[in-house]
Image 1 (spheres, rainbow, N blue to C red):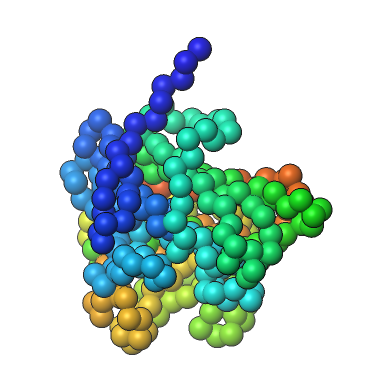
Image 2: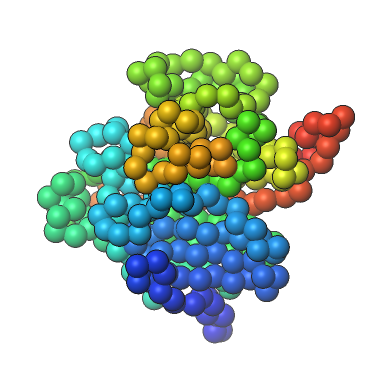
Amino acid sequence: MATERPSFELAKGINGLDKIILRESRNRSAEVYLYGGHVTSWKNENGEELLHLSSKAVFKAPKPIRGGIPLCFPQFSNFGTLEQHGFARNRIWEVDASPPPLPTNSSSNAYVDLILRPSEDDLKAWPHNFEFRMRVDLGSEGELTLTSRIRNTNSDGKPFTFTFAYHTYFSVSDISEVRVEGLETLDYLDNLKNRERFTEQGDAITFESETDKIYLSTPTEIAILDHEKKRTFVVRKDGLADAVVWNPWDKRSKTISDLGDEDYKHMLCVEAAAIERPITLKPGEEWKGRLELSAVPSSYSSGQLDPKKVLE
């Protein structure tokens, strides 16, 4: 029985880089650059951009693209000997014409399968053969799903270990009006305090200064409530135990060359990640990490967002 082929458009993006455009019937869309396997745009039915792309993003190798959803592999941050966040985010990916079957709940055919294999330079820095497959799927309700499958293809019998994150930049109206729910009472490592371990005390996370925390053993659902836009992002994740929450605020922003000085006011990174317990694969073994993002209208109660309606 023939299966319906995925529907996507290959186009030229900024600086002539190849990009994939996914379109859903109700005018929703997503864009993925082959440079970095990088989702740079996710728009709702009103054409509103739901991801934040830096006003100074550089679309030119070897600089990774700032904003959207960078992929951190095989290393998150400086948790290892490789370059910051690893090399997957500044390599050229390929469209995977014949990927292995991937069970999916989505009825959408607006998806694309990408693949990354190591270059000779990658193997010098990180001597492991792998196949990193990723499906980007724009669902029938506008949800955006990224499913990563990483396989150890070493022929020398050696296992390898990696850390990983979907470094998602959400577009928010005003960072001071945003709260994150689902991480309260959890332990976190504070990157601003030498990764010392603390326990979250607030009933929600709000933002008044630079924030850079790795929350541990997190639930499969996290909500980002944007008071001003009456919008809630729901982050659903599988295979990714941790969640990074980051906003550079004003002083740190000025030290990041490819981030606009005012960008921090309209962005928030909430990243589904596997950091505290790195993933180890023996030859032939495969790991799967899935991220599903949706944006839903928020309900109000006494001028506040009604949390009961958020994670339904």
